[in-house]
Length: 112
Length: 108
Image (cartoon, rainbow over all chains, first blue to last red; front, side, top):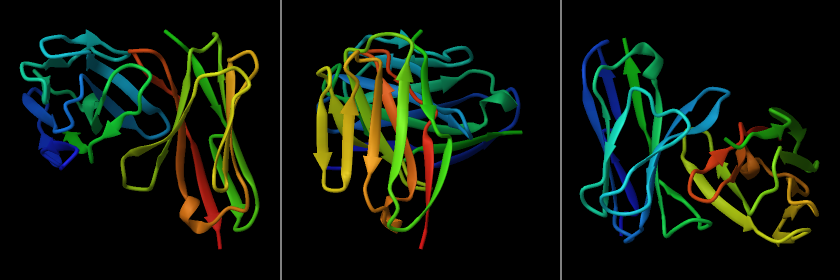
């Protein structure tokens, strides 16, 4: 039972490059979330999903796209990376609203 | 969206001293959650409060939800070095908002 896993753990991109971050959970959770964490800013919600095939915008969605084709996976895409997207990205999942979120270990992304 | 203020931003305490962090919202909340993030780690769920005036305890940690459901506090009695980390409150039904966190440093 791995919980929530994220790949990759680290990545360095050049400005303008694209990439996809993968989040997988094996707890059969309905809800999944993508956050970014910057120093002094706490966690900010990028996008979230309330079930397979659904996605919704969070607090800071610009520059990111997501997909939830399978219940266990939630993908976060950066089409054209910018230095402002340098951050630590966390994925989380939960049974539903008002339930505890389980976080993955994070992906440290640097855009130069 | 919902605005949540968390204070203080940083706190240094001597081991054995108490510690409190506060979370304040501009709107009435349906619930509030608390998470702890160790340095270099990921957030880990501590507790959820849903009722007005609710108080819950976990060993040395005491969590409180305000009567008006607009604020919450986390109090740690007799801090230990294992309490080091950043404590976040989180609120929201589907679109979850995290506070900016309180970073706790415990001096042995």
